[in-house]
Image (cartoon, rainbow, N blue to C red; front, top):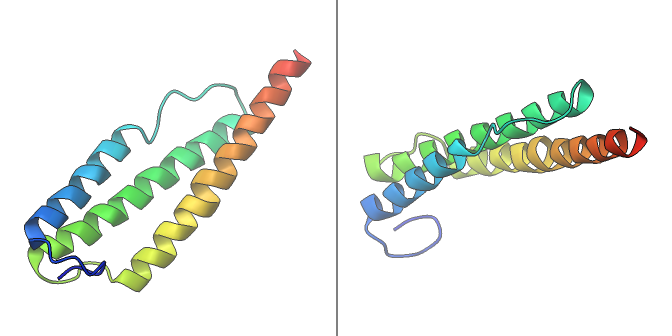
Length: 105
């Protein structure tokens, strides 16, 4: 039984988590507009998505392997921080700075 309480076959659950991680990682570092600080913030944002998806893949692969590669607590803390601070905050700041630069030009 997986941590969400569903009685899914572990390999189906693990395959879904790994698949999601691979698909999301393909979108992690798209072309970054702008220059300077906005570009750096977008790179951090994309890198945070990649980091979070690697964690999700490890967590999902642990379900397939039958033992935890990364625990639920570590997954929640690290994945949450990467998404909240790295992806969301840096991404929003970058987009805001880029919009201000375009408006000023």
